Amino acid sequence: MALVYEFVWRVLHVLLHVHRTLITWFRIRIRNWNSRLWPRALAALLMPIAVSFPNQKKFVPGTGKRVCRPYRWGADGKSLEKLPLHIGLLIAEEEPRYTDIANLVVWCMAVGISYVSVYDNQGVFRRNSSRLMGEIVRQQQELLGPEGSKQHSVDFLHNGTDKPGHQVSWCQSVLNVVSPDDGKPKIVQAAQRLCRAVEQREKTSKDIDVTALDSLLRESESPPDPELVLKFGPLESTLGFLPWHIRLTEFISLPSHVDVCYEDLFNALQRYASCEQRLGK
Amino acid sequence: MSWIREGELNLIEKLTANILKSGPMPKHVAFIMDGNRRYARKRQVERQEGHTQGFDKLAETLRWCLNLNILEVTVYAFSIENFKRSKDEVDGLMELAKQKFIKLLEEQENLEKHGVCIRVLGDLTLLPLDLQQHIARAVVATRSHNKCFLNVCFAYTSRHEIANAVREMAWGVEQGHIKSSDVSEALLSQCLYSSNSPNPDLLIRTSGEVRLSDFLLWQTSHSCLVFQSVLWPEYTFWNLCEAILQYQLNYRPLQKARDQHQEDQAIQQLEADRACVAELIQHCGNGNPLDAQRRQEALLQYTASREERVQDFLCALQHKRDSFFTDLTSQAALI
Image (cartoon, rainbow over all chains, first blue to last red; front, side):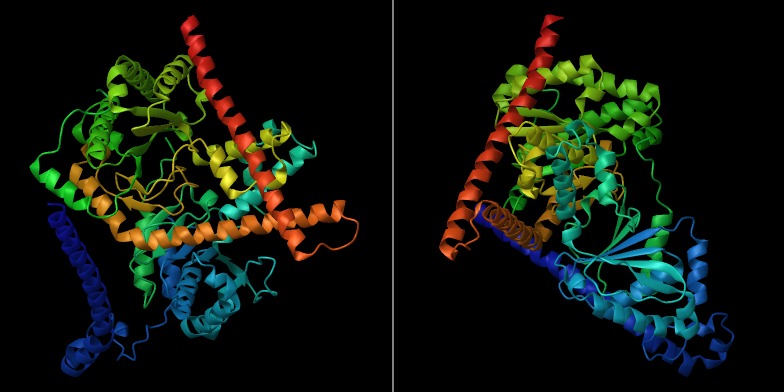
């Protein structure tokens, strides 16, 4: 009987995997079809009608690139009831695509989010932070154009070991590259500092409370706690992302960061804007 | 039993349970039982009724967990933040909790038969004294049971728990049990309220909210998180199965991430021990560098003595915690 149950379980899981793969496949196919064939079909077959469409700017014959409308992104940000001050991008996928992540960072900045954190649970971004930064600068030029890039600048939050960050004229957004070392290990380091102070009779154990620990974990340049984390990939976990800082963070999952588009990001922001935090009350 | 509903699964539920059990099953599930008040609004009943129904649903869910061989459950019953609610609501919740713990103590035989161990995690000194005493009696009475475990987080937030763990380690330093260099991720985990439990494999939050609300932030860093839109009093066996299915789909990659984290932790501990040994050699040495073998011996010796210190400290801490509950029960007995 146990073998029957196991067989049914295996069939169930195969079906679920196939289901997941099909959904991903369809999602990519529909998006490519939308960006390439639909505008071409429209242009070719329905030209007279297409001219009268109010949003005809969207239907640019595709090279697959999205139309750059930085002014629209800023307006989108202002139209939301609330926008997170600090957003986390948690990449829970094996192979990170730097261009897509750079796009996400640029869109977040353009929409008006002040702090953007990028995280993966193997510290890949931390080890390759200069490559990520380069990609962001490139995508900034491409998506915002030279004028836009001057207005929306990004500064790198120094993590001590990095070479001097990219400094552009007006600092409007700060990028923070986070790794698992910024999570539990940092809490442990703060704990060691407090215990050393007790060892040296500078403090007593009764002086240690949430506020004392919190102030050690919040260095001078630290961003505020992330209000929203977008998790990319099928893994349903925080994977060690800043445990202390995520007590009130909203988690929104997206299927993948590969070929992610602005609309995906904006939909998530809209979802965030509509959530209600009661804070215990 | 009032806390665990009596009853068995029906045929279809049993079949489904058997199929699910063919795959990896979570051994410890945590629940954020959210949605009682929205349920009450929906049904147009009093808030208090919503909370009572919420408790009944907990009893039913614990029964399902036992049927599915999930032997450890942690629930978020009352957050320190919830003290901000109206006095009426807070008093109502305290009264509900008191009644439930009193009822629990009346069912000692059943608890013994099922081997249920009840633990209450949180800063219990924030609660009314009579409730503290009832809780203490329940905890002490079921302390030795070991078939299944229910951890109730009451007057709890994760940040308070972590800060408390750091305070306990500082106490250990003050008492001379450990040194500040003994502080590590593993030791901090052992000082949390949940130190007697493994980390939850699966965390479920109901009512559609997608945040952790300061619950088990340390312990769930590599747990499977499932957010479900159903309101807690309307939770069904099928909702639970859906969550377990999600757990099974995430099992292998999460296991891999967890193992990676363990490896990183072990490396960090080894490096910390090496650094301590190097410092000791510098202090005590006569300037001659030790050869590799001597260094290795010194490292092994240091690690062994550190582990012994830590064990002694943890015993002292467990004793301190046990005494807290025992003292409360003796106080209650005197009244």
